[in-house]
Image 1 (cartoon, rainbow, N blue to C red):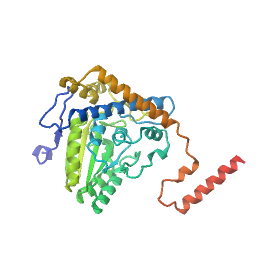
Image 2: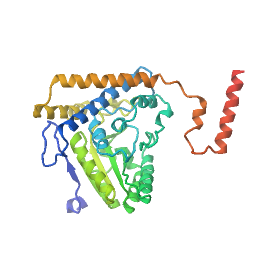
Image 3: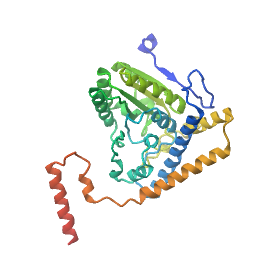
Length: 360
């Protein structure tokens, strides 16, 4: 008999709003209608910007891009629960988190165009740059949380990662350290069902990703990742718990990657189109629109206004982001160390001499 069958543990699942826009009022996070409309606006902004970035890549104006379509509720709902003083440690698919955090959208375009200057944080901003290596950012996040605890700072760290990251050693090392020292951190897993072409069903033998937290001595919880109110509620609770000094939480947000892994991937080669159609019915934006319709606060005019407003924001950001002057070669050596070591100084000088020699 398995541990699950013996009933020695269980994983709590949270859903506030179902796919038809119906609300469980006993779980409502007490956001007023203006805040819920703000969530919708942010999610639509993310979707329009995501589509624009995809088209920019296809037209050769930016490099490889990772789409977020279908995951808007997970990103916007979770980031909406954070305070400005809290830290965000993303993977590579969290553009919606950056948008909620107020990062300049032109810099997001600049960053996806390969200009690392876009990732330089202004003073006081607690957002780390996107991380391409799988799971390595979890250790950085734990380091931030450990520092916050040692310095007695009222800061919580939120680290994002996909289901594939849970198969990496960095994930388990980070979870173990956070559990032992009861660090103020929230592990936010965007379980979009696919690690490139590897489906969730063969990613792990456990019934859930959330239950992995149990091995490290803290709570794991599942939430409907396409339910923005549910994501907000459960993330807010986890942040408040961490802020009280009660340790970490692992949140598994069940969502779906509607597009390819990145623009260098073709999901049609390994994914049944019928599955995509099934998840379209759970679309986080469509779900929220149904909620407004049931409340009597919805109109086509409102949606058209939101779409036109965010489209202009995106077009302005693209124009600004793509017009930034290309960086000089010196940028290769900057923003790596607080004080540039001798080896980088020598390499920079060597490159300068080579480039000047070619000009002659």
